[in-house]
Length: 221
Image: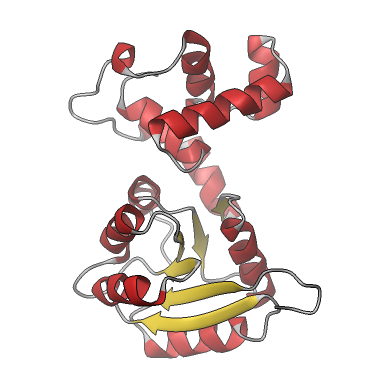
């Protein structure tokens, strides 16, 4: 435990470059509330270490030899849903971003942020708060209409949501905040939060970004 009794986040670091792994591990272990319990050199190694170490959170690189970070994220998210996965990479390519979020990542950060900011992002992600680098967030929202849906989207009528929940889901897909949804649908903020929680639970999604992607993939918007 750290001095202020906050929970220590147990982190697994996956990166194919040893110098990067060693550097990030050293910097993070100097941050209060962060404990790097292991490292992995590629996606397959990350899957094995996730199973044996059961970290709270994995910092996952994208491009790694053999199994890449996105494939590893999908496998770990499926087998260990309580382990949060935060992408940490130098690549801000839109395809990587969307694929990582679809795979189950709880955020997408770039390696140019300070160690203290990375530690704070880890703590917030571990607490269930989605993390995106500011430049990534702007790119994702600004180009969201270009995200390609599934080849054969499922009709919205087959989705087990109420009419009001579908309306809220459409708003999420349009990038609306809770306040904007409340104003648009003339409902309270508390009601919006309740609907968002129900949507994520029923569709088995982790966050509103995945909900927005889901809506576009299934022809809801």
